[in-house]
Image (cartoon, rainbow, N blue to C red; front, side):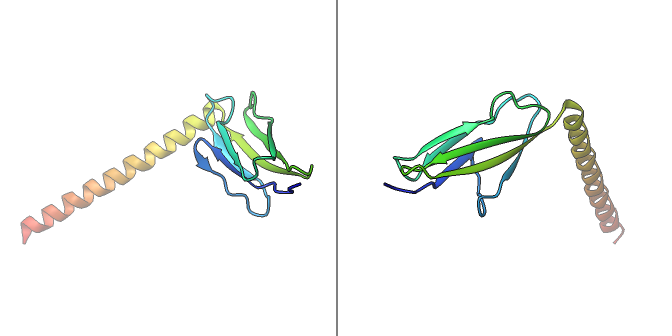
Length: 121
């Protein structure tokens, strides 16, 4: 009987890498209530169960993928899910917009300055 508990976990089609079986952190938009989790077990005789992935609340949530090897050995893979509330999401969007506008204005001024300097020469 195999003791293989290895698993490949995909969340929103991106593979999670677990170092020494530590937890991974995922950030979730407010409009979602669960993660899209897919997995592939290395051993076809092993079993996997996803625990805590329903009705994720604003704040920090714990989702566990529990793998049971053929011989009964178990391994938990923990995904910490930080779900934003609408205010946080709006603030981060606003910050990104301000940074984008600031960078655009800076680049625009630089181009203006270089063109103006070139015409003087």
